[in-house]
Image (cartoon, rainbow, N blue to C red; front, side, top):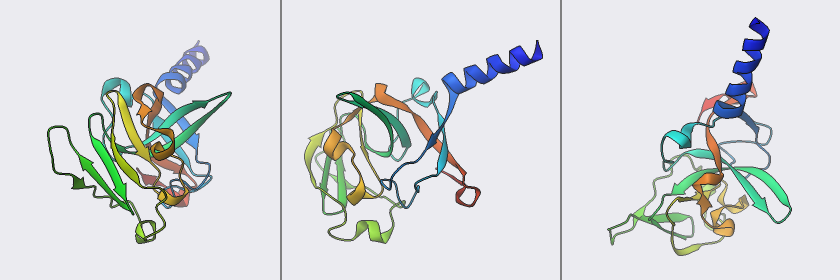
Length: 171
């Protein structure tokens, strides 16, 4: 009986509350490296909306392929996003003045001219969507190519790197 209850609890937690994700690729370098393992809170966005700066796992379906990606939320519904060079500007709904996005998680090398990939001309994030980007802007396939991401495609919020142990960190 105890084993059955333990298996049921494990199934519920794994299926609905918590998942782990293995980082593949360098799109989130230097925050996350290939092979890092993170825990993902799958309940996060059932209980509240995504926040700017959240590191999220999203499920992407293109044609006949499916994959999970890990990115950072940069823009929220109703906001206008622009990026010139390595500078991201956000205009909140009802405002005419864009604000430069403070991104303390980016290294200076990630901000160097010519390293950030394609610019973003003025793009409004639709309702129930977010605009995501990799921290390694020049090496990330993100909303600049994929477009805004529907919140229904968010698997959850990555909140801790648990492996390898020397990379342990809260996200």
